[in-house]
Length: 116
Image (tube, rainbow, N blue to C red; front, side, top):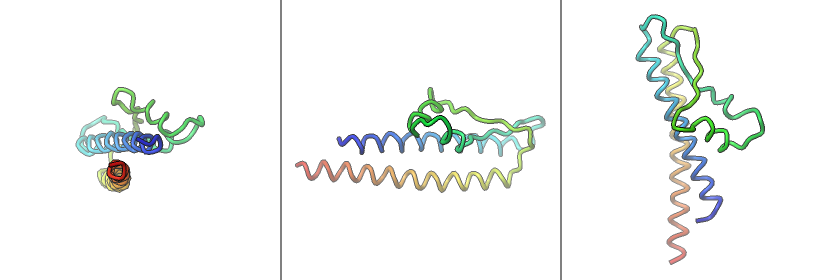
């Protein structure tokens, strides 16, 4: 397998995992909209993707170590409408990432078929 295809597969997989974890947090926020004292949680994508000059996959691997993502809590009350908008945005990111994954798999199939 071509290194760049393998690298793209790994990056896209990490991004899908991150999106999945964020969706879970947003769903938990909505489920606890009426829970007194509940602190809403979210993942700050810009914090993960900015900073120390590490590559994207290194940052994501650190954040996703053991399947757990470092989430941020907020003292603000949960606003269900805002959380639903975040879920929709997250869904769009998921769609883009799954299309990318599909393209990578198509590339791999092409390489296999051409090599026959």
